[in-house]
Image 1 (cartoon, each protein chain N blue to C red):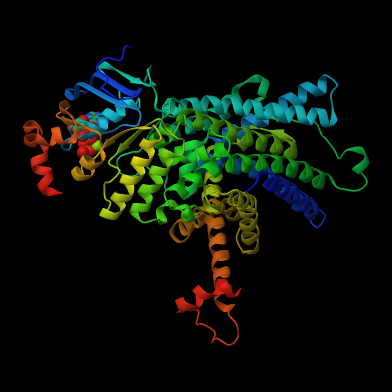
Image 2 (cartoon, chains in turn brown, yellow):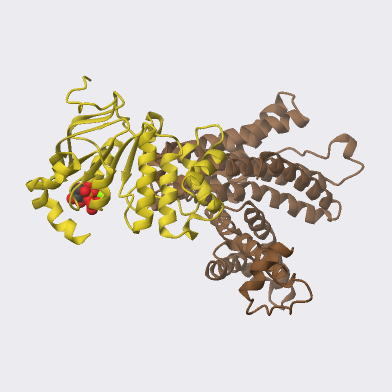
Amino acid sequence: MSARRTLLLGLGGLILAIGLTFLLDPYRNYQLALVAAYLCATAGLTVLVGLSGQLSLGHAALMAAGGYGFALTSQALTSAGVGGLPRFLAATVAAAVVAGVLGLLLGLAGARLHGPYLAGLTLTLVVAVPAVAASVGALQGDRGVQMQFEGVPGPLRALIALEQWQAWVALAVAAVAVTGLALVRDGRTGLRMRAVRDDEVAAALAGIAPARVKVLAFVVSSVTAGLGGAVLTFVTQSVSPGAYTVSLSLLLLVAVVVGGLGSLLGAALGAVLLVLLPWLVGTVTDMLPLPSQVTQRIDGTLPLLVFGLLLIVLVACAPGGLAGALTAARARRRARRRLTAPAPTTAPPSPTAPAPRESARTPTEG
Amino acid sequence: MPEREAPAGAGAMRLQVRGLTVRFGGLAALTDVDLDVAESQVVGLIGPNGAGKTTVFNAVSGLVRTAAGTITVAGRPAPRAPQGLARAGVARTLQGLGLFPGLSVRENVEVGVLGASDPAARALEALDDLGIADRAALPVGALPYPEQKKVALARALVADPRLLLLDEPAGGLGAADIAELDAVVRRVAATGCAVLLVEHHVDFVMSLCDRVVVLDFGRVIADGTPDAVRRDPAVTAAYLGIEVTAS
Ligand SMILES: Nc1ncnc2c1ncn2[C@@H]1O[C@H](COP(=O)(O)OP(=O)(O)OP(=O)(O)O)[C@@H](O)[C@H]1O
Ligand SMILES: [Mg+2]
């Protein structure tokens, strides 16, 4: 895909998504904002795992780093009298930088480690970050950092609800993150990543520095995860250690695999599932005649279970994930259309046994 | 480094290996190996399995540490790390295929020239030179083996190297494909590129190469014209006697 097409697609997608917010009620818009926040992280993760072949169980920690970076910068700027868009932009950049630096360190360590060791290192990080955050005074422990209320900016206040405004902001950041990742994926850097993923020695012999490419992939992925943390903090107006646990890391990874490794569309589908699945499960269990205590317990674990089952089914039936299954279905439909296209004089070919002669002739006829 | 022992009539030296010794733990994979390849020259490096042929390539590519000796590429010390190789004008194919299975045919070749201004166009050109430009968009795994070998060759050739290291380029190919490969190597050498090729296919090596170097247990046991090497009793004993009847 050319860079211009990617940019246009990113912009078009953003406009469509913003249009969508007018059709949704405030709660759905809040959910949409959450999807956008998770999308930043899943998109970065799918590039890291799918393109560069490195596994990270630490993306929740990178999101947390972004969230704290955002919150603390935002607070500092507020007390310095800065507000509005400059404050938001500066805090977002700070989130990206904090997460990016953490990702750089992880990537540097990861370039020397392989497979299970890298996974172990990232797992350590995701366990350590909330624990550290909870014990550092400046981060205000388990309670986390509360942001002060930031409403809809003046001119829009009469027109849209807070949730819709938050969704806009979240979608805009996600659009920037995903478009950036798409540009990386389609450019030389993406090709280098995939080459290193497939064969490090062959890549090195072709002039690629595998370690540098892998570290870069980690940084890029971490920056977008940090943006996700910033958006999540902006939307929920707080950041606390409890929101960024190991299970979020695992869920992000499952979402990416379910969506389709290496696919940005898959990352979006995964992010939607991340937000919708707990809600769907909650809705279903509410309808069942169960004591509230049981319902509560089920609500906590059932989404994980459903996600896990979905993962198993997809890995068994559609290794390309949801995005891969969609692409395959589209290809099948196109192939079927090509088969049914021939002129009415020829007998319609049976779809189960297409005559090779006919399918070979179609291109000249169509 | 002074260019001693340069073969008479040869042009500028592209690869000069002196006293190369490589050890893997207690195993002496290479001992005191000398090797020269001049521009436009095609040199064959042959020897029985495990003789150390690929290890020579690995040492030149910076993939294994040398215990002793010097390796000079176009008058300069060989790069320490493999990623410096391409910049030094060296391209290498790997034994087997060494392709990127997740990349398309064109992307596989593009990787060889990512530093240049239009890698995609260069890749298509290189594929066209080998007659497989129409395969560019396919996943590389969808190609039959001989065409995959061509993709690997195209990736080595795409950057217009001045020293080309080919590790068993004819491995697994039939007579027609080998004839085609022969023509490609001659064409490349005619442009001034120095070619060092490891090969088990003796007839191919003997007809194509200007010089043949024979390795056995990590030592050079013969170095000369194909005819001289073919007649060398040490070579017959170590290698050719078995292989010629086998191939
Ligand atoms: N990385 C390594 N670590 C340990 N031993 C090695 C390594 N690479 C090669 N060897 C050993 O060094 C010797 C030479 O191997 P090399 O691959 O160079 O042989 P070759 O001549 O290319 O053989 P073939 O014709 O089978 O490809 C062999 O005994 C091999 O087992
Ligand atoms: Mg070998």
